[in-house]
Image (cartoon, rainbow, N blue to C red; front, side, top):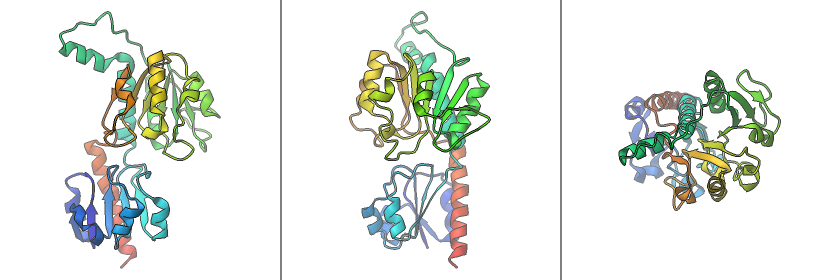
Length: 293
């Protein structure tokens, strides 16, 4: 059996998986691969699948599967897994770090100091304590963020199509009601036809004046041009994103917008998370081998 590691994983993973077969990172051997391991960079399209004649299983190290043609994979009998349990802590901490950094002007303060400026009076901070956080998407990561926000004595509101109660947030029946009440809005939704562009000029108009928006979910859940306009008008006080239309982004209008923090899709890229992903991958492959003896 050939296992192709197509994207970056923990350096220990090839050695761990070698007992199940040959392990390679040579993408030119895709046609031979029985199992392909991907993260967000590799796109498992129809064409990709047609090029992988031996492919039996794809494992996505991470949560989102929007870079995999799930319908075509199913037609071809290819098993697709993710490692959703692994990334919870890493992404929740990333979202919280961005939420702290925005109202505290961390990046502005650092950059100005390096330029020899002393903006002690100009940089006006606000606290998270007592503010309302609205979480759109109360899956594993959304709930983990809610727990952290509770520790900061924030009021936490949550919306999710099929979550009706939790100890960590007040469940609000509609997304619009969450947006209208929140000082901070954090996105934790998968990319689906129903969520693509869900944050647009119409929904942004419902935000509190001076609210903050954080996105560690999927880049295409926001309409970038509309976010830019909201930032320029002051409707949004700030926007931080770790996710993009493409990795890396191409000609994003966000780069000309004020009061932003950008990171290069590193939410899941902690050392600890990569080890957890490896543990889940080994378990999935072990089960697959056992079932196909």
